[in-house]
Length: 102
Image (tube, rainbow, N blue to C red; front, side, top):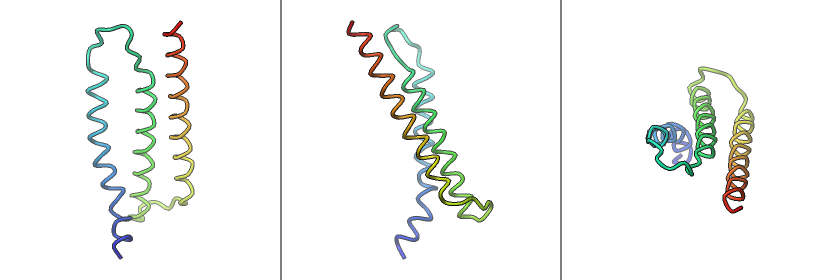
């Protein structure tokens, strides 16, 4: 009973937390950059992953409210996109650090 209730409310709480994360990203991207060595591209890619997460959670909520009829396995594709963007972000950061060393 408790697990079922939690699974119904969790996507709404997740979107609440994402609002805080979006605020922090806005602050990060609007802060003036004084140092040319600041590399924001990985953060932009993580921001893209957060947008994909918002879409996934929105579809989950709409599915629970029976507004749309989307199969559950669609969430796996969204999660795959999120994981791939994280891996790409790590590879970009690794290449950037290699260039900084040499």
